[in-house]
Image (tube, rainbow, N blue to C red):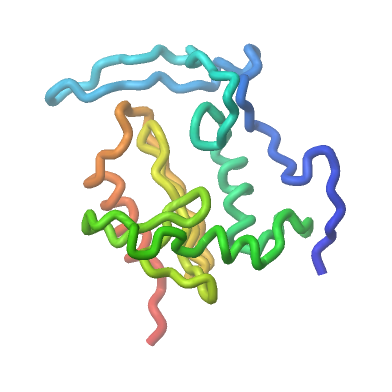
Length: 181
């Protein structure tokens, strides 16, 4: 049974910030933009972006890949991370279920929105299987509960959203998942 104790830092995220400490700025990659067949420097290595005073997880948070993967464990393990209960299983199922229903975008992606991330359209709360998002700078994260998998990749390119590159990544990861015979 997971513990329900909550300390000051229940997720134990060590490298997640809204305001990156200046002594960690050297860990920020340079960012580029496509300019025809070449890449053009947009922001130099170690240079942070101005941060807002409006805090939201989808805008302005900076996190290391290890912290991102630790956070994703919440959705893979019914709200538990490292033996500590962060969310109730019912809350995780609600977050991972289609909240838009028939109002979901009909863009051919087959995706709708749960609470905070994309989910397959028509995903009922009874058995959510996939949950994830495409973030800025070519970052994609998804949790596949059926395969017991968290996949994450990020590229330092602006603007985000090269669908072909991200779809190739998803296709390759899914092709590597063993299929039951």
